[in-house]
Picture 1: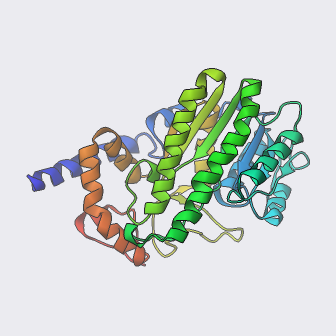
Picture 2 (picture 1 turned 90 degrees about the vertical axis):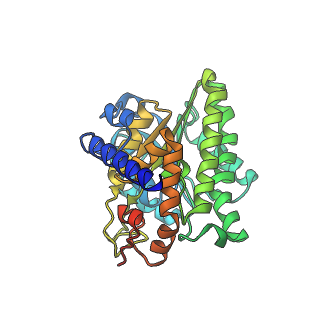
Picture 3 (picture 1 turned 30 degrees about the horizontal axis):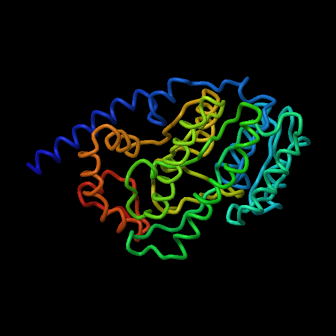
Length: 328
C-alpha cells in the first residue's frame, strides 16, 4: 500500500509539473492568467512599502515608481532607504518619494506615530495601499530547536508588528471607504516547511489574520491580497547572491519577477497569489487539494530537508523524496 502511494504521489507530481511547464511555472493559474499590471490601479496612488531597503522590497519600490506610484519607503535603516530613493525613476520619483524609518518591533505607540506621519505626507488622499513586505527569518533549524528568543523575534516583526501597523492604519482607510493591504506571506504559510517552523508558523498566522480581516471589511471597501512566494533569488548591491544556499544550484524565481507578479496580483485585486517554480508550486497544489497525499509527501522529505539545510544543500530538490541530499 505504501509503495503504491509513493508511485501515485510521484505520478501526480509529474503530471502537475508538466501542466505547469506550459503555464510558465512561476505562479498559480489565476495569477498567470492576468499577465499584465492594471496601471490605473497603481499610477498616482500613495503606496507604502515596509522592508523597502533591500531584497524584494527594494525591487517593488523600483517597479512601482516606474508605474507612477507615489511612494513611502520604510525600513529600520534610513541610510539604505535614501540609497534606494536615489535610484528610483518615475512620474513622482525620486523627488516625491517619502522616507519613513520604521521598526515593526518598536511597539504600538511608535507604530501609531509612523501611521500619523505616513498619512500626513499626502493629506489630500492618505495611504491607498500598503505592501507589508518586512519580515524576519532565521537560519533553518528543526522545530525542536526553536528558542524562546528566536520565536519572539520572529513573531514581533512578522506577526505582532505587522498586525499592529494594520490596526493603526485601517481606521483611516475605513473613513475614506477604500484601502488595500498587500501582504508578503510565503509558501511556508500554506504548506509544512521543515527546517523553518518559526517562520512557517508566523506566516500561517498572517494568512489567518488577513484573510479574516478581508472577510470582515470587504463590504466597507477594504481589499487584501496575500502573496505566497516560494524560494526567491535576491542579490546584494554588489550583485552577489544572498541566498542561504549560495553554493547550491536551486531554481528560484528572480526578485524582479516576484515583484512584477506581486504588483500584477495587487492591481487585479486577487485575494491570494502563489509565486514559485517547481517543485514547490506542485506541493502547494497537492497540500491544498489533496491534503492527505500532500502532507504524506512532506512527512517523507521533512527530516531529509532539515539535514540538507544543515549541510547547505538544496532544500528544494525532488531528490529528497528518494533520500538524496545534494551538498555544496
